Image (cartoon, rainbow, N blue to C red; front, side, top):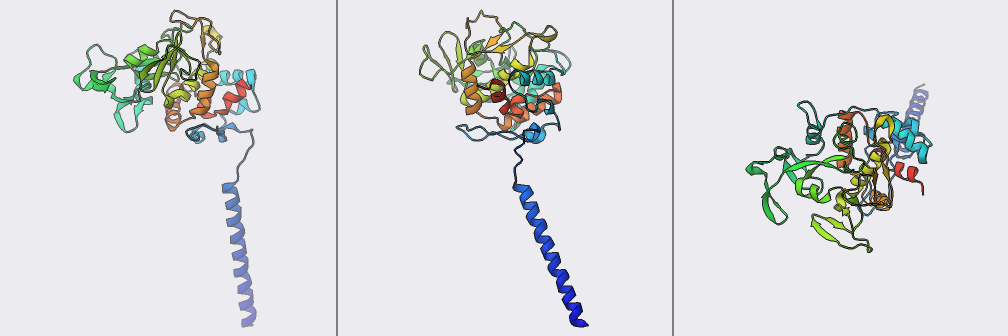
Amino acid sequence: MNKQIKSFLWMIVIFLILFLLIFVFDSFIKEFSTDLSTDDLTTIVDKAEPDNGDHYDGSSLIPNGYYNKTNNLSGEELKAALNDLISEHDEFSYTSEKTDVWDILRVADEDPNNNDNIIMFYTGISHPKECQDTKYPPEFCAVDLYGEEKLTEWNREHIWSKSRGDFGTKRGAGTDTHHIVAAERAMNSTKNNRIFQDCNDGDDNNIIDRQYGNFTCNDWGFEPRDEVKGDVARMIFYMMVRYEGENGEVDLEVNDYILNPTKKDKDPFYGDLNDLLRWHLEDPVSEWEVNRNEIIYSFQGNRNPFIDNPKFVELIFEN
């Protein structure tokens, strides 16, 4: 009888061990398997093949189902679906006693290592928030810039220049912080409303080194530093999708040939498309962009789709 009990107990032990092994193996498979379905774009962030590493995956921050209506779409259909998705959002004043663009930039462009500072977009320099656009900046606003120590202010830079489409600083395109950044005043003035171009790809003239990795060239071109080229591209693509001429808003388009790339040009076009597409791949989405997108979403209630899912660029432009 004792032998039978022992045999029975051993059978139970063996059964439990087998069950445990099966459970562990099944968990391992689930953990390391990859679902490549395109049905749920909130769980997929495709990886480009950039020069400086894979993009930062912020898909866990995307609200569940946010992009469901874009499933299996491409080209103009995808562009229209994204427009419908991101067009309904809160708008803020450019300058106001209540929450305005200044306030949002103080949060969105905050230096993660110093919450009293912002990061200036074109130079990458951390600078006190209190040095915000003023005629008489305090002494602590003096920094070593362009080879000399000087009082430096930061202001609001429209990546899609507000004169290209002539939307100014009105609510809407003029105050949409998905494309407005904190920038050092002098470099903001240098960029002006120049079109974005690669000034160092071998077919350019009148190339001027503006320091910190920025260049101007040709008739009216501007190349930003490498670290923000992808950021610029994804902001421009956001504006192209968000502003389609509906409800009295401006209709913005990106192309690879600007008919009149001069300071006086107010046509609602931006480029150069080919360079922007390349920058999107070469400078993939960063943790900075993901965090900034989330902060602006908390204010405006809409997102930049090209940060959430970089593959949207390829799907829209296709060829």
